Image (tube, rainbow, N blue to C red; front, side, top):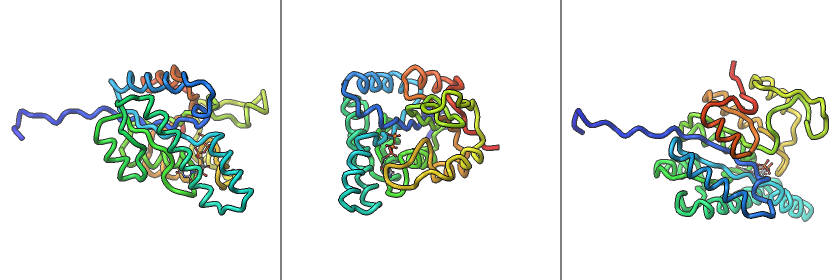
Length: 234
Ligand code: UTP
C-alpha cells in the first residue's frame, strides 16, 4: 500500500436484538417498516440484527415439552424459529442483507465483513437470543448493543403488572444480575437479559441499552440519545 493511501473507515457496527414479538404479528407492514429503517440507518452504521423467537417459539417449545422433549432439543426448536423470523426480515430487506442467517459466531463475523446488513437468529442451546446478541457484539467489536424489547426500559418490578413500577435510566450490571438470578433457565423462559449476556457485556465492556422495539426510539438511540435503560459497568 502507498503511504498516501488510507484504509476506508468502517462504519460503526450496531448490534440490535429485535424482540420476537415483532415477528408474530398478523400485519405484514411492521417488518417492512423495520427493513426500510435498517436500510436508511445503514448509511451511518452497519446494523447486525438478532431476531428473537417470540410467542411462536414459545408455542412450539410448550408443545414439544408436553410430549417429553428434553431441554436442549427445546432450545434447538427455539433457535430454528428465531432463524425463520430472521429470514422474514432478510426477505423484507430485499438484497440489502446477507442472504441467510449465519449459524455460528465465525459466520456472523464473515457476514459482517461483507458490509451488508446481517440478520441472524439464535446460535447455541442453553441461552437466549440476548446472550447470542451480546456474544455477537463482542465478536464483531460493535460500538453498541441495543436490546430492543416489548418494554421501554428496565423497571424495579413488572410494569405490566404494577403501575407504580420504578423505571431505571441507568442500572449497574451487578444490580441487574441480582434481579435476574431467580429467573428460570429453561427453554422459552429467558427474559430481558440472561446471566450469560451479562457476563459477556461485563468482560468486554460492551455499551448496552435496553429499550423499546420501536423505529423512532431505535433511531434516536443510534444517534446517541439516552433511550431506555443504560447498563453501567461501574
Ligand atoms: P429467544 O431468546 O428469542 O426467547 O429464543 P424469547 O424470550 O422468545 O425472546 P423475545 O423476548 O421474544 O425476543 C427463544 C428460545 O430459543 C432458545 C431458548 O430456549 C429461547 O428461550 N435459544 C435461542 C437458544 O437456546 N439459544 C439461542 O442462541 C437462542
